[in-house]
Image (cartoon, rainbow, N blue to C red; front, side, top):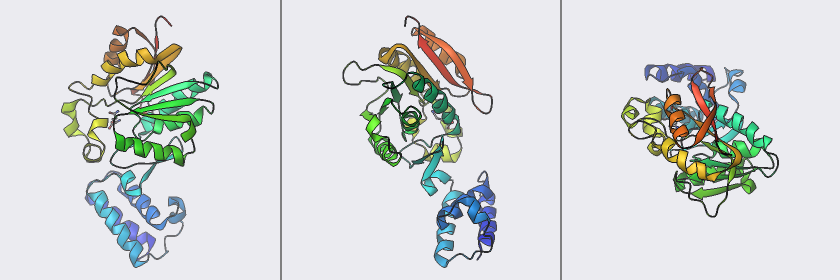
Length: 285
Ligand code: GLN
């Protein structure tokens, strides 16, 4: 079987299985099996697959039909151009969160060398690592409730050579950190899906992302309420909070912040024009 034939067969199979972007996923999977960039593979349609390559590709495609996320099958995801390993212990980083990383990176850089950032609920470590790379003199503390996620995040930091500037802390949204350490920047992509909406999520998300990384309680706002209080105590004067919002949550989250003594400074839309990133400062700082 050639590359072209294998792609046609398995893309059709993914399509029948209802997989979104079937053709592209088939390409990513086969490129992974062949250990070559996707575009390079595309240039070799007549290349013959070994029996082993064909079998591996078929097995991966079968798992994709069962809606295992593409990123779990290939084992990595690109986030802001950074290569990150992912598995079932961490939320797969989303393009929306890249926007938060970019905006927050600029803010952190603006605080100069010695700047300190806190990432609450780091998961794969995507935000913490992107911040450390964006602001070379900065130090980052990354907080996470799941020990398994912390292992993934640590490995991702090593992979991207920023381990020396990230401190990992095991803990929840109450931000219990040793001492009185304060931060110029606090970021978070908290769980924000309302519990009742979990069942309606696409299977890749519902069945394979960690539930704990998604479920924001009955109205999806639980973590914003907790963080509005705990992050407040960790912010240095002149610092700011930047976090990701779920669909339609901008007004409600803004109100939560204002009630906790914050001032909403800006709301940035994602690539779809949906309000996604909220920036807040503290009134008396
Ligand atoms: N953005 C994710 C989704 O829509 C949710 C992540 C989160 O709850 N922070 O599936």
